[in-house]
Image (cartoon, rainbow, N blue to C red; front, side, top):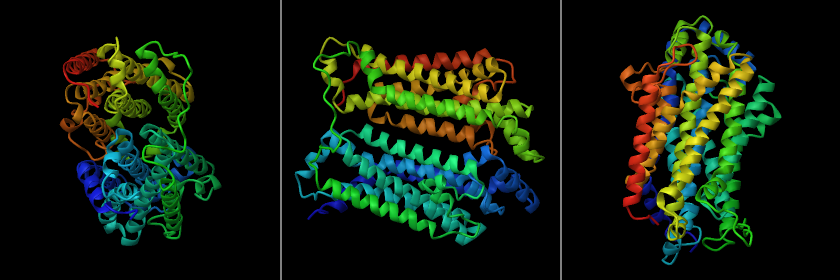
Length: 521
């Protein structure tokens, strides 16, 4: 039977993700559910909500970021402010879960051992999709329960839209896992489609406030937006999400029936007859250059988009004093323009930490997939091998932040030096999180992926914490909370140098652990 062993594999997948799935569901669903309280404090009256809805819908930059506001009720504002990003978070988590339990298992050889038993050909894929379904069902339930007080129909529509988007990209990852022969490429293809979907939705919404642009309708994220939760719901838009998930599931099942375990439809091209990669650094560059290019373009474009919003920062906040205080708390100063710029460069810094952590853990992936062992069996030391990847992680994070600062300054129109300096001032905190990833990889490789949790926690504290009025002691758990809020404030070298020294110590400790332990594989 093609589905034999599905139940056992599903239980195994859920056991392996017993921390990741509940945590990601709580973060994604809780982000939306908690939004009602924070927005109610900001816009407590119907007049204030109507005013912010009108101003946000009239602002093309804000529409490209969040989408148009379809309803000025509290639930409608929550759907506008958090719906798109919750859908993206659900999509990212779903891609990770499906690839982890399909192509990752084949790449490490574990799937071949399992397939030697009473396991059907389609059982692993089915188990991975069921694990993703459990994640997205949990997200949908949390969103629905958290917003039920704003209207049961709207809460259910938003929950289904967010969870359904996650399943669209879960089934997309199931397809990419059949097409490629590495988990990295499978995730990369799915991430590229997700990025394209976001760009299409942003371009469509920037051009029209109705949400009915052709570009918007070409994006699964646009479908979720056009469910229009809390605003005369278009439940039929959910049928597009269901249809896409079902079609992609059928395609994935058809593909998995036509290939052997470990094989793929997009075979890797053979390299040149004579090797051209003479150093470990050149190999690391070859492996990571595509990701670095993608992040660099994304940061430059992001800087250009946010820079164009700086002059309108006062219009975005309007006369709402609480909204002004949140921006000033995030930006650390009273001048709204500088506070907005400081908030943006801090956001870019927290996102750059994700790049740095991922780049460090790429070396961990090379090790666990047994590709590092043949290299280290020759005249190549572990430190020199690891250094190639660390140069990309630490130098690449500096590059992407510089490009973000450049984009902000160019779009803003002046203050190139201060804005660029403010962006680069985020590096000590970025490097601290990258150093933590090096420490975990070197000293406790089985816990290396916990570095993602640390980076995600810092992102949540920095971006959502001020809106939820968390105490300063909680915000200070993030290294970004100790940096000077630039531009606008005076440069404070003490915390910058302290964090840089801490990052160096973490890297040194991690490399020392790497030298002393066995190579994983």
